[in-house]
Image (cartoon, rainbow, N blue to C red):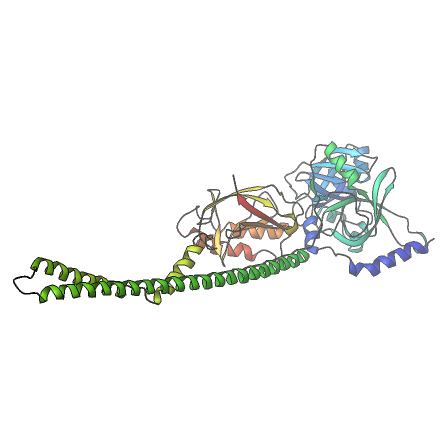
Length: 514
């Protein structure tokens, strides 16, 4: 029986290259909300650690851990709970607000000024396979590094270990996930993350490793975690979307763009052929009409000349009469009529349409057919839009995905208050909030009516650099002269501080509001 776990572990190792690997940037982003939970004793005014575990933020001021991590604090009210953040920052105290020994969960409120980025919780049923990462503070790593007792209170990055889910199974009267991502004492209460950095469970305990058998570990599943949080008035950030890497999303986007380009080329070819056929028909129709008009004018001129000839003969007869018998008045009338008819015949002949009239009529006909077409792309216009998320083109871990009302003016003003910058042929605005550890780069394509928000979930140090760069300039007022070009240049330093790839991408399609 002891060989079965070994065979299973070997099989997982063989299958690992074919499975989706976790994106380090996503794991790092989730790790920003992971903390060391320290149980602190006091003697003669001196603080010292009793034990420690791991926890992670489920709200800016609330942390989840295992119940057994805070067991000593439950037994002795004198003991305190310390919260030590990752990535810098001072340790603060926490207050225990809920404990569930049945499923080994505890909830702590941060009592100091520290605010943490909450981790997203994976929605749906617990996964039955796939790569996972344990994040926490194993004590054996602390010992191997020779850390002092005082180092426990110093901010340090957590340890990340990769493994695979081996199945979801109930254990100790609560729902757990079996996995192979190594944990040790101190990891308890830390998150078990999927490939997109979302919590799939709370690491709790490991299987005995007698006789060199493969090691397995257990995490409290989200089917236990989510009800526990909601019972204690915490509404977590739950993400039900399919976990896809940015590389997969970019590949799908390239394929979509290629399909759109092929469709556009096919449509252009079809419209070109239709235009050519319409031009040929217009050419034939114009040619027939012009030739017929030319023939009609020549025939009219010929008939008028015949009439003029008859009148001329009549006038000649009148003129040849003797002077005493000649009717001078009638002669003048007939002679004048002859001249007028000749002039009309000449005018009819000279004003007949020339062959160049064919081209003019063809051009007029083609222009008339184009008058009903849409405006050219890139034409500046004001838009009142409602933008709706396109899930298949987006990658979401913790962002809000509600519909966006988007009033756009031709000079890049949004909702009458936010100026967008124009650089490199695109409109964008960089947002660096003080109350959130994320930089958002929002962009808008007015031709295709696509709104996009790319979010960079940065660690504390990089977030500070981005805030410093943003503080160097004041965004121009909406619609002021040259605002778009000026802001496009001002934002460049902040953009230069960001990683090459965002953690999240939200793509919205925008339509006119009713």
